[in-house]
Image (cartoon, rainbow over all chains, first blue to last red; front, side, top):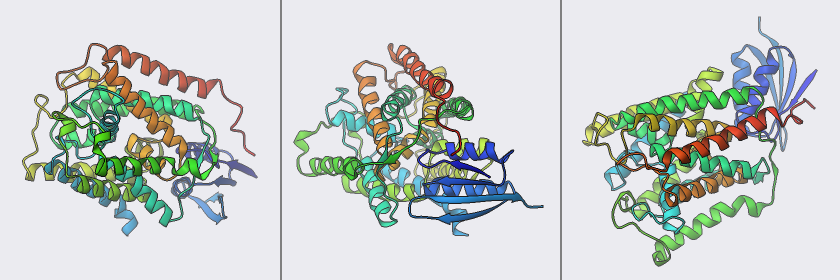
Length: 70
Length: 355
């Protein structure tokens, strides 16, 4: 499974990475470390119809982005 | 429910605060303008000698400290940096040169439109064009690389300097320059301006209000929530201006503005382009700087430096129009931004691959 590491990368780059990856690499795991990036990416993936689960650790958010809803 | 209306409410609050500050003494359509106020602060510190624009604006001090306080409360204060600070300094300087050719940052662009200043609509087209230009490079892989955790002293440096500036302003004004006429002499009462900054800093931090993101996210990510803040700001400021007689529709005789359409377009175009590469508009950079991001501090220092350059070298426009040196200053700044964009997109590719 693909893992995108977007920790420390400033807005809007994580979203662009995610947007490109969602075209071909789902399911994938995305790591971000700012609340801003996490919220933007979660919203974007959900709007695209993907199932998103989030795990929050002390220094990062891990987003598991699964298959599209039917 | 509240989340859905959060951003329009923030925009409306921004408008109310801005219109009120103008009523209480700030220059026309300049309730809150980050570029103008950083420029005035640069003048207060003697970094440039344009006598008409010198005042350590309490609004900016408030933005930084309001962000600091709220980010400490929400435990989001995070000293971090290391993502090309010198490049960001240069981008900040170029953004400021663009803003001073237009006469305002994106915040003031919206406030100017709400005051009936049609020159700002020309600027808006430039701003959007600049954002498209910046997004072209971002989509091709532009990156200023990662930030890392840094020393706490780096994270609190700007808030600390802001407190020193505030103390000087209140207790030792003899250290600072104050305009006796011109925009720098038009000022709302100190503590009201400070309170306005504190509130908008805190609210700006929580909402992540960003004028570049408003357009960028709508066009490129089909996310219109940030744009809704813009629209609310515009509508509420427009209503406020109509009620209080500050609305004046047209191109000519607008407060602190000129009518040169080409340079209004190009000036804000440069602001849009540079701000997209920085990851946010000047307002957002100040907010990020207050929450511990030293890369944004570098951008803000770059803006202050750019303001000093713009006035010392005669690049800044005035109500009379674009200055003689303005076009050359613009060309140099635009080339610098373009070079940064090209290099960090096409010649700097090592990173990026997934872990």
